[in-house]
Amino acid sequence: MSSKSSIVLLKNVDSIQSYAPLIAKAAELSEEDSTLDILILPQISKLNILDVLLAEIYTLATEIIENLGKPQIFTRVLFNEHYCVLKEPSWDLLILDNSDNSYDDFKYQDKGSLDNVNVQRASNDPHHLKKDTDDSEASSENVVALGGTFDHFHDGHKILLTAALFLAKKKIIVGITDEELLAKKKYKELLQSYDYRKKIVVDFLNYVKPGLEIDAIAIRDVAGPTGYIEDIDSLVVSRETISGGSFINNLRKEKGFRQLKVHVINVIGGEEEDGFQNKLSSTQLRKEEYETMLAKKTESTTNQ
Image 1 (cartoon, rainbow, N blue to C red):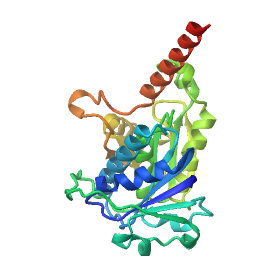
Image 2 (image 1 turned 60 degrees about the vertical axis):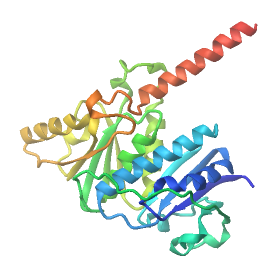
Image 3 (image 1 turned 90 degrees about the vertical axis):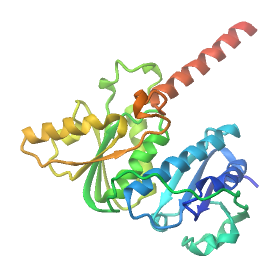
């Protein structure tokens, strides 16, 4: 059995680590260039709960697929039944633990057409989630903005975008840094094109929460669209870039625009005390790609 698109059902949010065998089985049965969706079955009502769940699930899944030597598998975490309105999802494999009745809670109309693999969860003690104070509710703001380079699309990007999707009722405005502002980036020769980055972002947004209006805009200055579009309710930033929220609001105040509610999302693999030195970043991924290319070039030269 070989899968191009699998989905794992996750029912117990107090024991994320216990789902490692299910994610591992999905990855084992997946082709290298495939998708792996992980569906949180319980309804998530608060942003601070979703934030910690996303970080734990994405971290676990990425560790598993990298250990299996399949880093090209594209993972997505789904939430709150938005999957029910997806137009023809391409799943061909369903991974679940039948002992928790998760199949009954899975509301995909064509679930009977999927190959099912039953995998027993690991025995892990439940633990309480360490939540931040932002308990904003789902679909609580009409227009939500965020921005970034979104180069070498990674889990941190997915979490930031998913937080914006969770909050948005009608529209997402996503600023994507244009190439002219990236001239001084490290390993700039490995930067992906603006059009490629835009497509990855828009496709992800439309898949995880279909039905919202998505406005992807090129960032050509420090403020991006939040500096000239007044009709925005909130801004989603990472903890590493929290100062950017204050800058944006000061700029909007000067222009007579209403202030934005700033939502701060945690950084994967970094601590505030050390300046987030170990955070997951596009720069680090470009560095690893450069070093891999250099090693292959050196090996090729040596073998000639």
